[in-house]
Image (tube, rainbow, N blue to C red; front, side):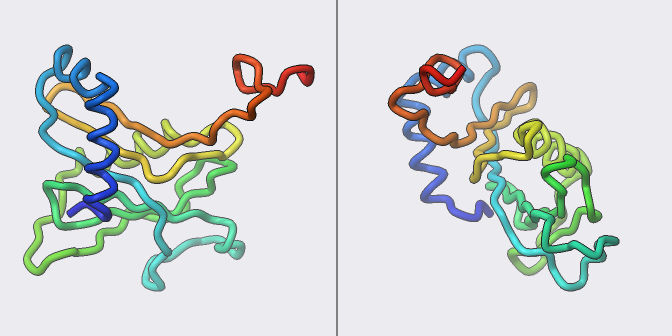
Length: 155
């Protein structure tokens, strides 16, 4: 289950009203699933081979079609995995997601971490059988920003 279905619905409503989702569905077909990446804590049972564990960031992906959340610890500055992927059951008897969803989690996460280690949270993923897209929040540009985000006069 999605970590925050209400927040996801609000974002989806906004993306529908701006035409983003209709354009995606026109090109690739109906959205069949949703996933979101948020922050989490590294469980005590997960082994991390680093003394500076506090410098790591733990991410979690939840789905609207699966009741197991996936988690991983990452060094966002180096863009490296620092743990194995773990699962957290959200409902009794839940079936773990297929390996393809684990790969999707890692791919989507790393595609949305900048070279400087910056990332936006939550990441909202929309998928179907042939395509996907992810919406990520970004900080607003300063009022005096030039195209590309550099404040005018500082380029």
